[in-house]
Length: 87
Image (tube, rainbow, N blue to C red; front, side, top):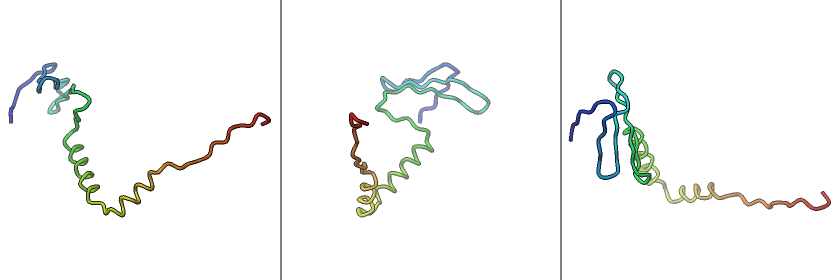
């Protein structure tokens, strides 16, 4: 693990297109600003781990259950009535 010291308003560059900037320091908390391309996901660790758990749980679904979920997501078809000229 690379360990760096930075002051407020100083940055770290990762690759060619990820910039991490120390935005604020208050007591034992550091606020970071992260600029990254839209195709790169950026999450707090606890959020990332929750996403991974949900993905693992979803991958264990029984195929029958998955078909039920697919049916739930089907749009409901409704006929649209156009107002008649005499309405």
